[in-house]
Image (tube, rainbow, N blue to C red):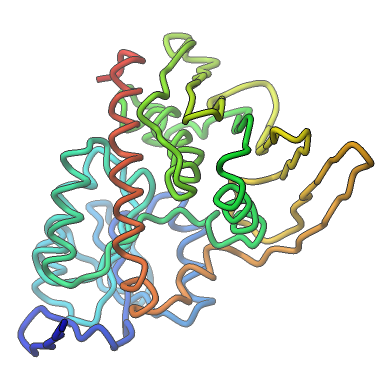
Length: 328
């Protein structure tokens, strides 16, 4: 018989409580344009900011220069949202978890299997919520695809994912030269997370072509197989925006969805093709950023083991692909 005991102590939040406030660590363009509005719409109040840049202060919001300062001053019911470059996620997430606080961290959360395993274990030991912010998973179209992949896992012939963008904002950490700041880690984590969640083996995926040395046009092509399923992932920078998923089944059926790895509200075209015709379903999606922040602690805790297992698989794959690309 499993007995669950809730202890009330300093820096330990009851699993049934909701967050009363939010502290954002890092206030770049993404946090300002997407995270702040989503937090406000979902009813979560941002009361603190960790930033070393005085010009990024928010009116009425307390600013701290270090994570340690914020942890020592803010109440236990504060949710910490990390929106900093991936290279410093590990240290920041570890500090928050060790303080017994819940933490949401931008994708990719971690860049190695060791980091993912250590902090996943620590989060479970401290009974705190650890979430990698992959907003696209909130979309109904994505959940339909995941259900289809799980249901037809033995008959999926091919999975193709394309996620290409025409440009990278200048003056951001994405233009810096390191694996954590590369488009490979920034974009490949999307399709890799989809495959991991759907139960596919990522260990045979390899980087078969990359021109990451050509800074004006870095494209990464990843291929491999999971049992009988051929997988092809294409991410990076190209002349036009492409964001789609294509499935092909042994019986000739095909399913595609576009845009797929996307968090904004709007329509998604889910197309099902058979020998007898084609059916297009237009799915109206809500803002996935807001939906993610509307979920409460019990929901995240209930899915934590499966989420962190997938996170480990993705982190391991990113690390391997980074080495193959010469970025590690």
